[in-house]
Amino acid sequence: MGLFDRVSRVVRSNLNAAVSAAEDPEKILDQAIVDMQEDLVQMRQAVASAIASQKRVQQQYERAQNEANTWQQRAQLALQKGDEELARQALLRKKTQAETAVALKAQLDSQSATVDQLKRNLIGLESKLSEAKTKKDMLKARASAAKANEQLQNTTSRMNTSSAMAAFERMEEKVLQMEAKSQAAAELAGADLESQFASLEAGGDVDLELAAMKTQMQLGGTTTEQLPAAEAPTAAPESAEVDAELEALRQQIDQLD
Image (cartoon, rainbow, N blue to C red; front, side, top):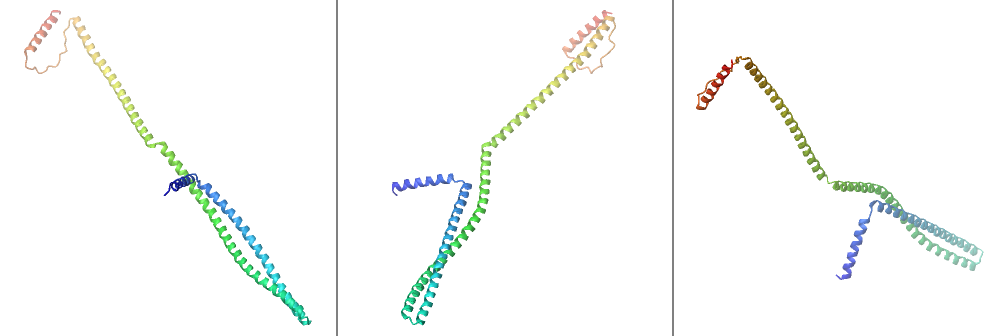
């Protein structure tokens, strides 16, 4: 394959691709209907012209037939009158008109066949045009639906729904974490308050008991309340020293009486 052929093929392929890409189905269908309507108009004009020509030939044929018959009658009249030469001339005219009629009849038959074919073509074209109009509306509706679906798909693909849903999931997890932290902080704050009030209440009891002990010591009384006795564990050297110190403290309190 020569270089020119290869370049020509590349150019044609590019042109075909460009044309295919530029074709809008709706516009092409509308233009096709316009073209068919123009063809229909031309077909009707051709049929009308053929019919008119057929009628002219028909008239010429009938006139030639009439002329032939007329000269036939004139030849008979001349022969009856005894003018044989005049009868001969009339027969020559009759022959000429008869031959003309035969030729016109052949032309008339041919034109009749042409007119019949043109009429069938016209009817076929009208039927195709009607079918094309119906099909055009259907194809345009399908093209519009396909175009709308393509736009929807393009819009959906540009939306990047998966990334958007992932972002929603991340934000939902973050909100849950924030709620958990808030709830934990509230629980810690409540526990801290409870512990503070418990400390205050416990401290109040000790202070009251200490104040009562001070009052009894100032009045010189002895503590009447005794702590419940507990089981005495086996004394260790350290507990003996503590007991000795406790006994000394009691004696000092007794001397204050």
